[in-house]
Length: 542
Image (tube, rainbow, N blue to C red; front, side, top):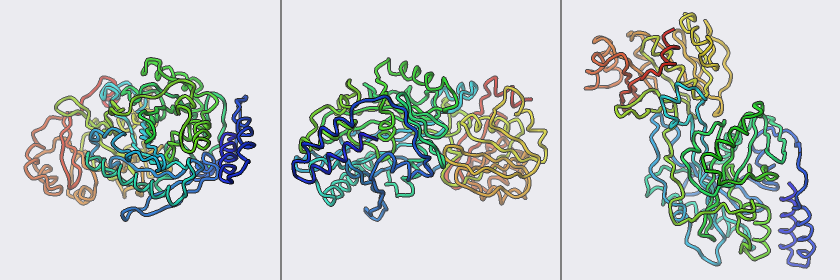
C-alpha cells in the first residue's frame, strides 16, 4: 500500500500549510515508483478488516438521512455512501426500469463545492456452464445480480469534514430523487448492510488470506483481476465465464466523461480460469481494454462498494497539489491509455435485473426467473410429479446453489447423482446437518416428510409432494412460493381456497403436464412452460 502511504504523507504535509509539501512530494514520488510486486498480507478475519486494509486509516460510521441509517466511509480521499438499486428481496424478478444517465444524478457544478463522484457498480453472478440451462435461458438470466451506487465527496481542496458530509448527503438526496422519478427502487445501505455488500462483492470468507501479485489479487479461494475499458456498457459482460463479474462506471462533477472498469473474479484453484475469462472479455469488448497489472489491489478497492475514489494514486496526488483541480485525466493516471467516454448520453446498454432461477418460459418464449435465494429465508411448496421436481432441482443447481435432498425415498432422487447430472446435489434418506448458507453459497433443501429445516437467510426449503393432501394446506398457506402442476378437480379446489386463486383455479385441471403455475403467495400467479431441453429430459426421466 505504498500508494496510500504516499498520499497520506502529502495530505498531512499540505494540511500543515508549511514547506513540508516540498519534501513530501519527492517522497511520494519515490513510493509511487513501480517495482516488482509479490506481497502476502495477514489473514483478514472479516469484511471490516478488509475494508480497513483497502482504505488505510479509514473509518466506517453512520449518519441519518430522512429517517434512514446511512453508512459513511471516511478515508483519505473523502466521504462515501452506498445506495442499492432495485428490490432484491422480492421473489418476482423483473428487469429494472431504464436507469437515468449518470450525468442527471450528479449535482450541478459549483466551483466552491467539493467534487462529487458517482460509481454505478453492477455485480453479476452467472450460472454454471450447464449446457441445458444455458440453452433454456440463452445466457440471459444471471443467477444473481446486484446494482449499487457509490456516492463520494472528495476531500481535495481542503474542505472540512462538515462541508464534505453536507455535500455528500445533498448528493445522496439528489441521486435518490432522480432515481425515484425514473421509478427505480433505491435505498441507502446501513453499516451492517454495507459490510455485507463488501463481503459479497469481494468473495470474502472468514480469515481469507490476501496475496497480491503483478497480474492479480488472490483473496481466499478466489483471484481478482481488473481492466480499464474504453466502452462503458456491454451486454456480453453479463455472461462471462467467471464466478462473478463486476462492472464499475464512474462519473464526476468535474469532468464530462466516465471511467469504466471491469473486475473478473474466478476460483484460484482453476489455473486457466482467469485466462479464459480475460479472453472472453477481450472478445466481448473487441479488445478495447487495458489490464491494470501492478495495481490490481487498488483496482479491487475501486470496484468494491465505497470505491469511486479518483483512479490511480497520482490522480489524488494531483488533486491535492492543484487545489482540487485534477491535472491529469483520471483514466490516463490509471492506465496510461484512455478509458473515458462522453457522459451526456446514457452510458449503459444493459438490461439490469431479471436474475434468479429460470423455472420455465412465458408464452413469448422468454425465461421466467424467480429469486429462490434471498436475504430472507424462503419457503416453497411444490405439488408436482417426481419428473418435474427433478427438473426444477437441476435448474436450481445450475445457478450454482447447493442442493440437499432429504427424502424417505432417496432412491427416487439417486439418478441426479449419476454421471452427467449436477455435481452440487447430495441426497440423504433422513434429516442431516446443514452447512450455513451465504449469498455466495446459497442452499436449497428439498424434503418430503417431517418438519421443515430451520430457516436461514439464503436458504430455501422446498416441500415436495406428488399430490395435494388436506394436511398440506397449512404448509401451503405459510409458503412464500407455491408451484403447481395440473391438479385433479378436488385438489385444484383445495389449492384455490388455500391460496385465494379465484378464477385462475379453473385452469389447474385443464393445463397440460408441461405447464407450471407459479404462485407468489398473496401477490400473483404466472404460468410457465417447463420446456425440456434434451439433456434435462434425459436426467429427469432416469
